[in-house]
Length: 492
Image (cartoon, rainbow, N blue to C red):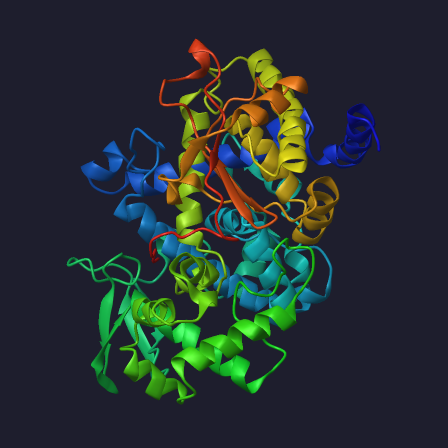
């Protein structure tokens, strides 16, 4: 049996073969340049709103997580950007750029969404495999950083020309039309709805609500659109036995496709909901994703216990065509970027030597972080600087990231936001702390983060006692749960 040192020598060799993606120059000169530009873009975009948005343009915070949601203005901006990302991806799939060659870059709001999308490694990998998106397999951070001058993104003429030719909407998100085309979830009739309404019923608002002339009894809202997304996919899966529902393609560890297991889920859902035609089933369930989940939860099938159902069908808790909830991811990402802004990373107030030291330490701690996951199947997570290192690793592309984290930890290491799971904390036990101290890892303090590895969602957050100045806060973990977690319903 190999000694502990021999095991770590093998681990270190594997880690060292991957770490060229997150050196200090790359982190500071590319990733943090992008994070700063993204933060400045969002703050500038929202500063034109009313006084309340200027007072709190990014997020509504709380003392526990530092993040509890977002301003309505950020929700609206995110929803428009997600729509534009969808248009851009659809154009890529059907254009010659999909076949190869240099990929012109889209607007910054779309890049922010793409970044948030790729920082959901498991959902993103599933979508890439299902939709065959080879051009999106790496995040073009070097090219993006080259276009950022003094914190502002400056697209090239080919970028502008390609966008207009392929997507045919204004490059500047602020110049987007005030209405968007959506489809009735029941009859698929095209509906033109405003992004923003004074009563809060616009498509980019949490209280979205409209009607369809052909379906007068149906209230078209985010919940109904989620139900339509689910029922359409379920109907497709019934016709095509090679298809599975969103979020069920990969096996539990994320190592390989598992269509057989996905098909079992389809069959069990059909048994519970029935084989009625799509629209009849939708009418029966009031075109409500909440009602669909409730029906699954109240069945006697042990596969669909409450926590499993919310988790298994997370992909249908947002009405976009993407598996990941990019509105929620954007909220968390902007809160993350605010931590750097407030610490002086973007305005020159933080000394260069301090930045280099923080990033150098973060790279070392990232190695320790991965070792903790590998050896304990739990997660000790640290600073925002370490999260930048983790982001850089994820952005090498979903296939590479999966193969590398499988080699390092035994499974695909997912990346989720602690803001969804504020009530699942407990301290590490003595054995866990003993392991960390034995291998010199106990200096790692905790900040918001979660991941899924080997079917266990693990999470950490800062000690309630306060910042690390008084000594590193206690490492924490989440109570062991099923493969994924159970957020409340979130809508764009």
